Amino acid sequence: MNGDTEKNRTVKDADIDKNNASSNDTNSASAEKFADNADADILSDDVLSADFISARDTVSGGANDVCGGTLYLVSTPIGNLADLSSRAIKVLREADFIAAEDTRRTGRLLAAIGVKRPMTSYHEHNKKESGERIIKRLEAGESCALCTDAGVPGISDPGADLVAACAERGIPVVCIPGPCAAITALAVSGADTRRFIFEGFLPAEAKQRQSRLAELSREERTAVIYEAPHRLKKTLSELRSACGGGRKITICRELTKLNEEVIHTDLDGAISLYSEREPRGEFVLVLHGAESKETSVSDWSCVTVAEHVALYEAEGMSRMDAIKAVARDRGVSKGVIYKELLK
Ligand code: SAM
Image (tube, rainbow, N blue to C red):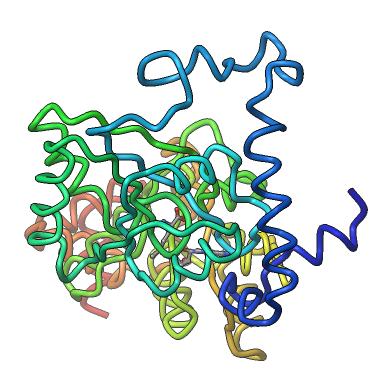
């Protein structure tokens, strides 16, 4: 496939929406293409090698058939319609009903692939009542495809509660894997991918936030953080206070879209970059891990002693314990820390 064709399928600025609003002709053409693909491409045995599960051997009773009484978590594109998998399309087409975080947005996605199914809404603010109704329908033998606005349901998105309720009642749950902003960012970040933590959105509440920042300052594994554009500068600045300006960070913006951008820098560099431009679009921050304890004594020079003590206090330590911990981190005696605090 040439680059231009690929770009044509890219949905600029988060937008399956825009793409779909722009042209009905494009929609019906892509609907046909996707529909063909779903049946003929991945699922036909002649394109399958031993590396892939055959359509006849896979989940739920030996086929890719959509089974009654099953909840399907259908991953949807994080910006590029072409990332919707053939299997996702098949489930969306065949499920008895679709539970959507935003029925209008999912409606546009369905229109783009030429699918019409009954929809119900399932989002953060109605998840209890809506979840109960969905469970009843699953127990009555219907199949449900759950979609969020983008990416994998349940990952910083509604879905986890419904999955837990299904697990409690023995209702089968099948995930149709696909685009996920966190994993896409991690993969392009250049950070250590052998061990990582998913932080999602940092808590908004001040004390919890300070405590999480303090944890991140010591975290040796790569951390993946979601952030909204209007909070990006504040978060970068708090991360710098906690981790020091030299900590490496990869800023991933508008992944899979036309304006995709991956910036490899450190926290000082990130802050100076965004002092010159306004953050726009969607962001994942990949914070590289702290150096291991054996080599990190000098790293704390980027954080003042008072800030360092405050980080531990925010985690709930007493002043005395915080001073001890700071002394240990910096490889100095408690007396040195006391003196510093009195200055
Ligand atoms: N469930 C989604 C997933 O699997 O990635 C995440 C949903 S969460 C509500 C939305 C956040 O994911 C955004 O605020 C942003 O941090 C990140 N995100 C989603 N799409 C993105 C993209 N195309 N580029 C960069 N970040 C993205």
